[in-house]
Amino acid sequence: GNRALSATTSQYVSVASLSSNEDSGLIRIDHRISDKTNFYVRYNIDEVFSKAPSGNLLDRSQTSTAPMNGVMSLSHVFSPTVFNVVTLGFNRIWSLSHTDSRFFDTTGIFNSVAISGYETLNQEADSVKAPTTYSLKDDHTLVRGLHTIKFGGEVKRVAYNYSQPSQSALIYSSLGDF
Image 1 (spheres, rainbow, N blue to C red):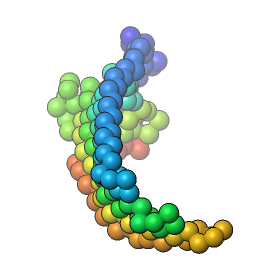
Image 2: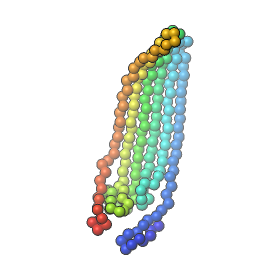
Image 3: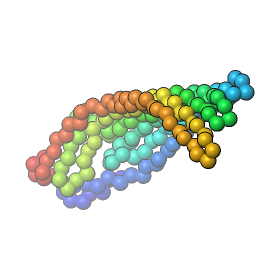
Image 4: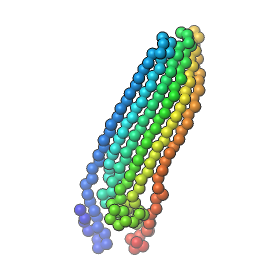
């Protein structure tokens, strides 16, 4: 509740909780095409939703995240000493973050407010992140006596998609300036 600290200042104290829910799944399919060729595909997803206190005045931060990845791989044995693996894959971590501002809910002021010596009153904010990596990899292995020679190549594309609105603030150096 509220507690007066002086004629111009009160302190608000509250209890808040952290909650989280997570679900995940994985599927993998292996297929033997022939005695010398194997193929597999795998997909994994994990969905997380969490709520947590964020600063003061009952502000809440809510985050929804869904990391996922998948891969297809083809391996072929050319001879007992020569084999090759080709892999195509992707990774993605989609995330939506929302900060609910009690200050914005009660005043309609979109800016955060900061006064030196006091806790900042947050503004409502959302952000979306979706970094994604795609890769194509080819590995070749050659065995000669006691020696193993491996070589190959990888092509990778990384896309970092990020969206966050600009933050604006009203900043005062003292309570008197407010």
